[in-house]
Amino acid sequence: MSTIPELTRSARELMHKAVESTKREFSGIRSGKASASLLDVVRVEAYGTPMPLNQVAMVAAPEARLLTVQPFDKSLTHAIEKAIRDADLGLNPSTQGLLIRVPLPALSEERRKELVKVVHKLAEEGRIAVRHARTDTMSRIKKLEKVSEDDKARAEKDVQKVTDEHIRQIDTLIQAKEAEIMEV
Image 1 (tube, one colour):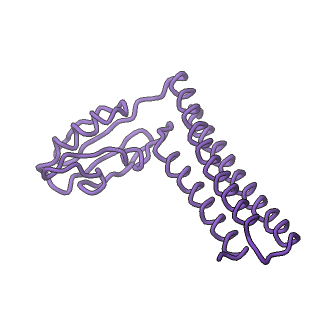
Image 2: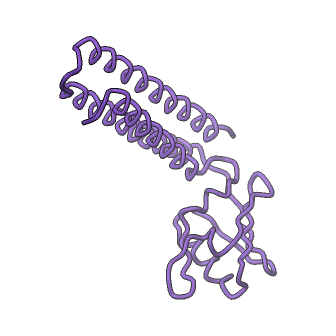
């Protein structure tokens, strides 16, 4: 049997996870600036299995429009270069000695608008996850026995307050990411 504090804590945790997940999704979307997390989606065929790029190389962003990838094992250089090219990120890496340079092309106005739409779609998924946590918690609160109606009503208000807070956090993330993408 759950108690009201346990249910509200659980709802808060679920909502926090939804916001964090949205943040992670946003970090993978390319804006005008280079970010090492941009290559998090790249999988490299290494030692017979696909591995995340950050497990076979060090990724850095030394300049605003350049990423550098330094393989831990020299023999993987070509596999890493191929994986970045095939990742459908519109990037064209080139190897210079032991370093793979990945210049980021400037985004066109049209591409920026497409990315903003993607950001809004991801944000809506985050909001849906937050609302789902609220709905689930509210229904569990209503089913509680041996709890007064006043306590249930107070708990529902608290859950709604937490929901609004997390939705606002997602809205703040959208505004920041949209500004970052539209910045020329």
